[in-house]
Amino acid sequence: MLYQRSSALFDEAYKYIPGGVNSPVRAFKSVGGVPIFMKSAKGAYMTDVDDNQYIEYINSWGPAILGHTHPEVLEAIKKQAKKGFSYGTPTELETEIAKYIVENVPNIDQIRMVSSGTEACMSAIRLARGFTGRNKFIKFEGCYHGHSDSFLIKAGSGMATFGNPSSPGVTPGTAKDTLLAKYNDIEEVEDLFRHNQGEIAAIIVEPVAGNMGCVLPENNFLQKLRTLCDENGALLIFDEVMTGFRLAFGGAQELYKVKADIVTFGKVIGGGLPVGAFAARNEIMDHLAPKGAVYQAGTLSGNPLAMRAGLTTLQLIKSDENFYQKLNKSTETLDFEIGKILNQKSIPHRINRKGSMMSIFFHVNAVSNFDEAANANHALFNNFFHQLLEKGIYLPPSGYESWFISAAITEKEIDKTLEVVRKFEYS
Ligand code: PMP
Image (tube, rainbow, N blue to C red):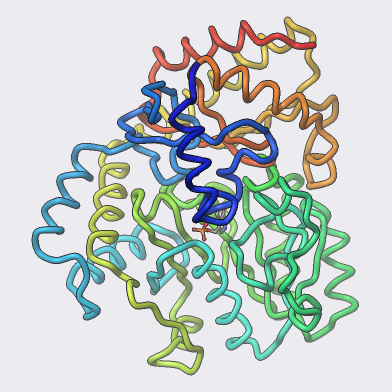
């Protein structure tokens, strides 16, 4: 494949945009090579500026669960756009989507819309602190909850890709209130509660982690976190930015039957437009301004174009009662068939999968926390990524990211993907 125009555009972008990109992992720094500039996307495919076409396994890092540019979502956005892009006033549509989500997601009474997952998680922590009157919180190594200061300590996603334990600019004062534990290690969480009695406001967790690659909760980990929070008067925050409306309509809470106190959303909830949200029961949400004292605001929060794209996406998912079954089946087929091919080639690997999230670790051992994910053969992943990319398969450009399968993927795309994986040369 030729990437002439992408290459030229990257050189130009590099002059005016830090590192040439508006979000670090897009720069292909860990996998190497020129980041590919896209010009359009439809269904299961993206087309780049050199007219190469790719089968999509990122889907805008999760939002495009229906595939790209779904015609009904497009129509809904167009219709709203004619009536105005943003008013900065309340709209009926905001109540419509709030009611719809509250009625369909377990354990929440009210929801506040924001414009990104970062804002959602940052606000959830502030709310938990305001509610409990405590300062500290627990997060897990390799989990990513956006780029707000207090989360950038042993975070996943781009932080893992670039190997930064923490970011310059995060003050020691901020960092000291973020307590760290290993994912799936309940004893470490117990120790933290023991040594910080009465000081921990919340635990925030990706109920299925997607930012150290896909890592699943094991041995009733989520249930045990619930119990520890109850015993210690702390809130349990499920960061469902990736998992919300993806693993089930009610997200990981529904799938694992574990009740969270605060839930954060992003990605699918905006149908590809910039949306995040956080939600909880009345008792907690009542603390939020303007009713309560915990401040939080946003010029474009509840933006009508974004709300319409989000609501239409959610309604389309809900209207197909076999939606998740089909989505998960495609993902399962990819997992099993890719696994078979890699076994035939005697390539040590582990595929972690939940619903329509999955990732491949080139590793002999199981991967259930960040250290194990980091011990995988990332050089081999990079090689795998490039060989697939060359043949029109677009995977996330890092071994620390989850793949997101969309409903637009059919047998045809899966067959083509497997054909390409069969040609993978391992040296
Ligand atoms: N939480 C999780 C679990 C995420 O995966 C992400 C983004 N990948 C975020 C929060 C932050 O969301 P955003 O990039 O929209 O700020």
